[in-house]
Image (cartoon, rainbow, N blue to C red; front, top):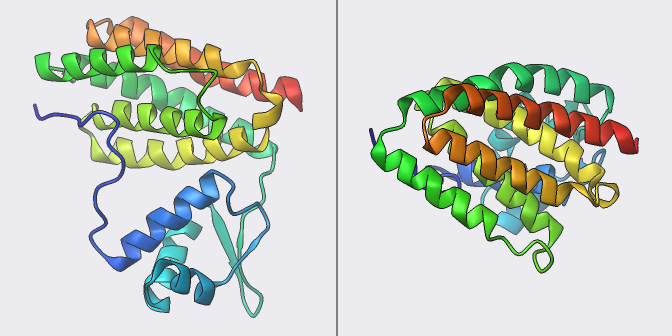
Length: 223
């Protein structure tokens, strides 16, 4: 089994289209591009230092991810965040996140277990007060991606990244109202990672499900 590369971000983009896709995806997830905002491919190309063709390719991929929507003769826009989507996204994640936690736990060799333990330690040591909440959100994204990567199932990883991105976008919409959630979320990550690192597949599966359902409950409580 190979290393899962702790808290690794996406690989170095293989093409200009990949570069544009990753840059735009991050801005859309973290709401640097707000829901409903138009996306000017000319301006994006200029900002990223690439041509319009890679940007257009990136926008097509993002449309498949449900992060942007294109209208004939009107242009491309960041999709709106509809709270009804929370139930749909949570339904998928409630089935697949526990599966990912179980598979990662079952497939982890000694090296991967050591990496998961290290990640749990680093997560537990986070400065919750001194770290910007958007950076905590990025940490959350990277923890989830590390777990997905540890399944060694690229198809499951791809699907989970897509829906975790949509969940994170919803989270960011309500970030200012979820003031008590950060510490709880971090604690859940630590417990989940430790269960995975110690081979407790049933417990990891249970904690992953509770994490997804707890997120949905927290958002609904502030709507």
